Image (tube, rainbow, N blue to C red):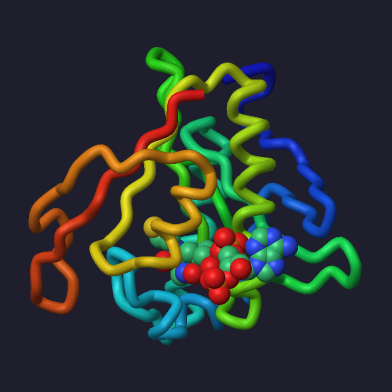
Length: 179
Ligand SMILES: CC(C)(COP(=O)(O)OP(=O)(O)OC[C@H]1O[C@@H](n2cnc3c(N)ncnc32)[C@H](O)[C@@H]1OP(=O)(O)O)[C@@H](O)C(=O)NCCC(=O)NCCS
């Protein structure tokens, strides 16, 4: 990816502004990650300690500084309402590939915001030279699967017992997209 790998750009769509994640965003990410329904298909369960979220976001900001991942906060252009986050992680410059992720607050679901934001991320990735994107979903995450399929991802396989969550092993589906 090029040209400035440590600094993801601000992206804008018809309704959304995607800005590089900042430490201050932790305050607005907290209610999402404290919501059991939002976290139902995440690798870890809901988190009720804001300090833990501060630490996670600080780690993501560090990852950006080292060029290993890009994280964006999503806000409406109309009134600056916080919608959620999305990312390109596991950036591999040798193989021109990365992994996508996304999380919206529940009140933002069902309005096409995730699709709109991810289309901008996919276009940015393609224009930066990324040629393959990977996504991983927990079995049963129908909303996420539907989104990935709309974005053109194809199912590529199953990772059996890939995640240990709440004392149980969960299967994950792999999705891929060649750009
Ligand atoms: C995965 C997730 C981002 C999907 O959100 P979403 O809102 O369902 O996704 P989309 O942006 O594709 O929106 C699709 C819905 O918006 C509706 N919609 C409304 N207006 C729309 C518009 N202008 N354009 C497109 N779709 C629109 C669609 O009909 C569809 O509704 P439906 O689900 O009732 O059929 C969300 O469920 C989430 O944050 N989940 C928790 C975190 C998570 O699991 N992340 C993924 C880990 S792999």
